[in-house]
Every structure is written in structure tokens, then in C-alpha cells.
Length: 77
Image (cartoon, rainbow, N blue to C red; front, side):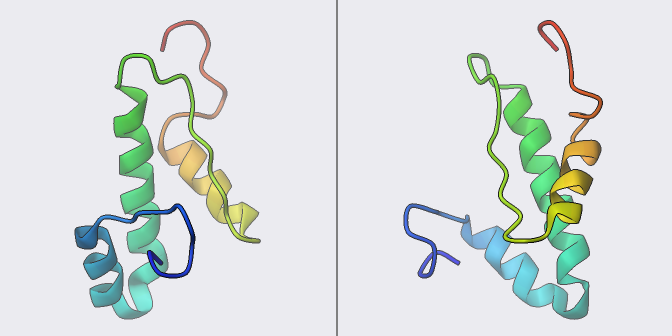
């Protein structure tokens, strides 16, 4: 991913986990992404994330739901 998507930096542990997951890579990717988005939510001053599903809107929806972003949070949560 790091070589094919300009401006994108995927941490090496994430890449290794996806490579090691084999046929379960989609599930592992959803877990990693959902956890990362949930963690980003806790950073002061960050008000959102930009998710791209590369044609897989179903996976974007799954990440949004797993990360607690649907229904859309209101206020300071």
C-alpha cells in the first residue's frame, strides 16, 4: 500500500497483520481500521476522519458503525 498510494503511510505492523491474515485479511482490516478510527476520535482537536473504501462502500459503512460513528455523534462526543 505504501508504494502504491501516494501520500498514504500504513504502519508496518498493520501491513504485516494484513499479509499474515491470508483469507481473513478483510476481517483483520476492518478490525484494524475500526480500532484506529476509534482511537483517532479520542485525540483533542480532531473533529473527523476521511474514509475511502476504494469501491467498497459496504466496508466503509462497517468501519463507521464499528467505530461508533453511526448514528452520527452529536456534541463533543
